[in-house]
Image (cartoon, rainbow over all chains, first blue to last red; front, side, top):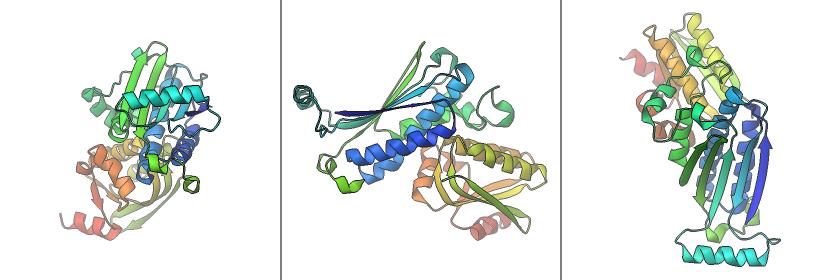
Amino acid sequence: MATITLTISALPAHVRTARLMAATVARRAGIAASAIDEIRLAVGEACSRAVAAHKLHCPTQPILLQLIDDSGTDPVSDPRTDTSSRTLRANGSATRRFEVVVSDRAPAKDTEETANHLEPLLDGLFLDGEDTPPGGISGFSPGLGLAVITGLADEVTIEPNDAGTVVRMSWPLQADQTQNPSSN
Amino acid sequence: MDLKLDHYTEGDTEIVVVEGEIDVYTAPRLRELLIDLVNKGNFHLVVNMEKVEFLDSTGLGVLVGGLKRVRAHDGTLDLVCTQERILKIFRITGLTKVFGIHSSVQEAIDKRSSK
């Protein structure tokens, strides 16, 4: 298992950097070409949501992006860890996955969006101009962003708590593509 | 790639040409352009998205905002898009039912004229 961690300031300009890095790492991990676009978009949405939340609540705090390649091809990984994680996989039905975790530090109780909440989602759709909260990002609607994430990621969990929200997204890895260096 | 914006008049329609990436960083510029065009009395807009490489929910929000503005003046906002990767985002969010999506600028203008 290999992890790449990126910390970004809560600025819209950095969301693109996060997207590009996620797409690059996903490609290297062996994600199917058709899913790269989905990952790029879903990661962008998760980071945009985090940037918007930070802008309102804690603009100086950074946002954490973790890209976890569970392909087991990391040559420097500890063999014991590798074995145990393989056993875990063999026991469970879960295939090897590429996981992206976006963690923000904005208190979740103030950001009224959850993936299952349809009303605010529809309201958010029409967020524009006059409706943008003070300090918010014009045109950005958190509900719509989450709807896009849930539509794109193979598995999603959104864990809101007082210390911030953690969005976990993952996609299955194709075993036969994991070691293709030319796919970079 | 950054966002490039251009626009030109064709009859009573203003064509907005968008090139590059529409995301949380660049979308405010598109929003400003749409607002500016509406404020100047252009109520029939066609946004040509054939050269858009990336579109996220912020971009969608801006387009919906533009649609809301032109509709307030009985206007229209149609899109030109044939790229599957961009169309997919409209489908996921159900916005294919909200926007008229056409395969060329001419088709967008013709469809509106025939209404």
